[in-house]
Amino acid sequence: MDQKTYSQLEQNMSPKPPLAGNLIRAFLTGGLICAIGQGLMYFYMYFFDFTEKTAGNPTVATLIFIVMLLTGFGKYKKIAQFGGAGSAVPVTGFGNAMISSAIEHRTEGYVLGVGGNMFKLAGSVIVFGVFSAFVVALIKTILVKFGVVGW
Image (cartoon, rainbow, N blue to C red):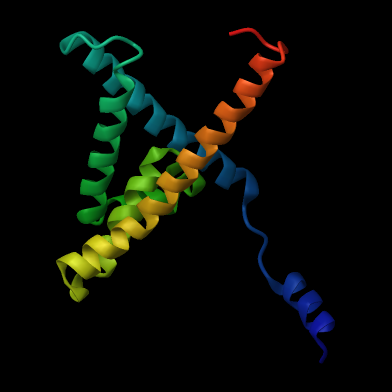
């Protein structure tokens, strides 16, 4: 049997994923995470006198911290299995990925195992974020310089 015939046979025999159910679960999971984040933001604004603009940073840090705890206790895996991309796309996916790699490599030691592997992921995210911000700032500067937009 050649590769093409095998691929067709595999597609015919494989069960079709429940696409609509997966989409609904991802939407509900991501929406719930965002609703919790919005509640935390209002909490910081009401009790700690943050403005709407400044409440975002502690909200994100709190969400990441909660997810790291849930991942450490093995509870976030169940949420991720249920919600799929709905749990990975918000900032909580970043926290889960960082702590998961740290837990996975803890047998190699705290410095080289936990620290080294945890920051492999964080480093690439930070570099991509800084580079993206640079490109956006460069485009904005060029557009303002030539008078296309006026900020």
